[in-house]
Amino acid sequence: MSTDRKDEATEVHIKNTAKRLFFGEGKFNATTQEIADAAGVNRTLINYYFRSRDKLFDLVFTDAQIYEQKRTESIIFSELPFKAKIEEFIDESFIMAKEYPYMELYMVTQFNQGCYFKDEEGMDRMLKKFYEEFEVAMEEGLIRKMEPIQFIINMISLISFPVAMRPLFQKSMRLTDEDYERILNDRKQIIMDTLFCK
Amino acid sequence: MSTDRKDEATEVHIKNTAKRLFFGEGKFNATTQEIADAAGVNRTLINYYFRSRDKLFDLVFTDAQIYEQKRTESIIFSELPFKAKIEEFIDESFIMAKEYPYMELYMVTQFNQGCYFKDEEGMDRMLKKFYEEFEVAMEEGLIRKMEPIQFIINMISLISFPVAMRPLFQKSMRLTDEDYERILNDRKQIIMDTLFCK
DNA sequence: TCAGTATTTGACAAATTTGTTAAACAAAAA
DNA sequence: TTTTTGTTTAACAAATTTGTCAAATACTGA
Image (tube, rainbow over all chains, first blue to last red):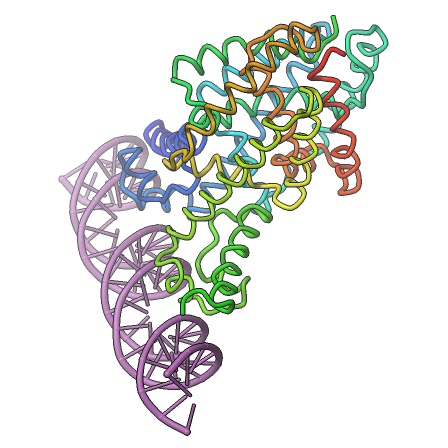
């Protein structure tokens, strides 16, 4: 039977290992051998469970995309007030970034290689809802006047870039691991202050 | 002779083509054959001029790093007032980003693979100078109170991320090329408004 | 022109990586 | 136990990619 515990364990274990290598360690070009070694399994099991290297890559990419969207959706359609939603999003993003600092970078490189976006409808629904609440917040003077898309770009940039670019920032500015951890911890407040007027 | 025009032409031409593929088109894993084809030369010329694929990659990486640092240095040590320096930096960055949108992304992936930073001394001099002027600007109430490093991270994030992440943003938010061009053009003002109080 | 030097090319070898297959092995059902 | 099904392994083949080398070509200065 293809649904017993053992089967799933190995299949899921390989996928999780790939996820860790891609998103956690930034090894975007891991070979099947490297993934198998990291998972402690025979290399050909990757072919057995996923047919090909590409199929495994696609699967991890799609999974991450869907997961991210679900996460964002649950915040946007929650009952929190606008500003609290943003705080929640920052918190969640930092938790995610702690485990998978290179995820966004990986997504971009995949999109560059011609991957396409999965759930366009869901994204449309989210953006519509966000735009509505954004308009209200702007009226209330919570945010400087600007296009909602610019606010979204600002927000995601301020959250994701420092995490994704950590090796570059840290090396070029000669910061220790402790320095950078502290800097990241301070960022939530900095980002809120930067995004909101009051 | 190894310094005549023809020699340099081919060598520089190959290097520029590699630069275009990496930084301009985001093809971080271009093979020697792909680079040679794009340059319209025989593949083995890459070995003739650069010994190995790795050496060529290193060279492009180092060149870009030095160029970026020089560019930043000339702004920081110019006679402009603080705020004008930031404006200048944004302008220059967008010009650069227009030709090489994936440069920063490439730098990060290279750093991830263990590349090291070249001119640490020069960077220290720049940071020292920047921190001094930053303190003054903060005293004058031009900027909200924060660590200078946080300001730098904010600035670079707001400038670079939207360019590097363009394929992701554009696809996930269903924006046309024209839409995104316009959004980027509006960003200089948005960034200045976001970074400065007055 | 001609010798000497630098550049370019194609053929080849080596290394790396992926995917297939048949056989061994393990677990569950008959 | 035997059969059946699903899982794991090693050996092999194929594809891709890199690097070397000798021969061919182009260029330079005497």
